[in-house]
Amino acid sequence: MSVKPTRLNQNNEIIYVTKPALPPLEEFVPYLEKIWNSKILTNNGSFHKQLEDDLADYLGVSCISLFCNGTIALLTALQALDIQGEVITTPYSFVATAHCLIWNKIKPVFVDIEPECCNLDPEKIEAAITSRTTAVLPVHVYGNPCDVEAIQAIADKHGLKVIYDAAHAFGVKKNGISMMNHGDLSVLSFHATKAFTTFEGGAIVSRDRKTKERIDKLKNFGFAGETSVVECGINGKMNEIQAAFGVLYLKYIESYVKKRKAIVFQYRDALKNIDGIRLMNDIEGVVHNYGYFPVFVDEEKYGISRDALYEKLKRHNIYGRRYFYPLISQFSAYRDSAMFGPGTLPVAEKTAEQVVCLPVYPDLGEAIVDVICHLFDRSAN
Image (cartoon, rainbow, N blue to C red):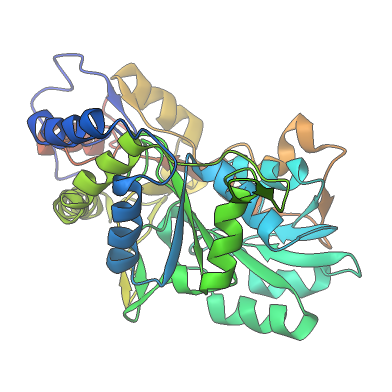
């Protein structure tokens, strides 16, 4: 290892896998004062409207609907497209992806992932399609774009809808096109751990005004007017404080991404030549948000297991996360509620056993990154 810091987290600072960047508090106060003066706390206030406009412009999309969180947004997206029966999805994601299917009484059908980007493998989708399949729910894992062209071709061939779980993909573009502009709908999360946050929050990106109008009704109990309820909707609205924070946060997003990128490149430079440690690199033509830095540990080549490395980091107060371990399909809640595509899930299972995501957030110092990288030296205690 070329990186050899003279001390290993000597101050015992606890370093989590992420920590939200916060704009200066004094800049947020005027937003709060405006809310206090208006007395409008929710129900499509001025900041809500402004954030929808600002995000549509920043993301390069035509229609976006804000939500209180990403899970409610995904639940509503499935309702908006009347998805039923079976949906093909990935086992390699946060549980909310599949939970939303179960809550909508839809059976998730797990198929394997491809090894490079950890996304749903298009070559495995078609064999899992049955007469009950109505949609595909892929995830842009770690913000790496799915093979959207191949997935759409399969969906078109079989008359399926495509909803992208884009929780990791805020601001990600490929060949100049926002990844939100693929499939029938894309769903975002603005949770505190994400590249863009509104404390909690989320959104659905739709392709046309008619679909947006239906989504907006569904997230507000189905109201179409003061005395008219046209659908059995839910309360998924984003409040004004969340929206105001998002308006302010968006002014800082580019600087935060730049800082994350510098950290990711520092990791890559230090870890790139370690036998048994696989890294993800930038994809040609893709604008990344650098929200995650996963490494994959080949125990046979590296000499110790992923879990041994994970525990070693923890002894130095470095708390990485094994995103995503276990697989969703391995949780007891899914033993009787899911189906599996032909064969098993060998790539996903291997990936889940090897992955650990290292800390990445704008305020993470270079010295701590040096410490983390040094701990990859097997001789370091």
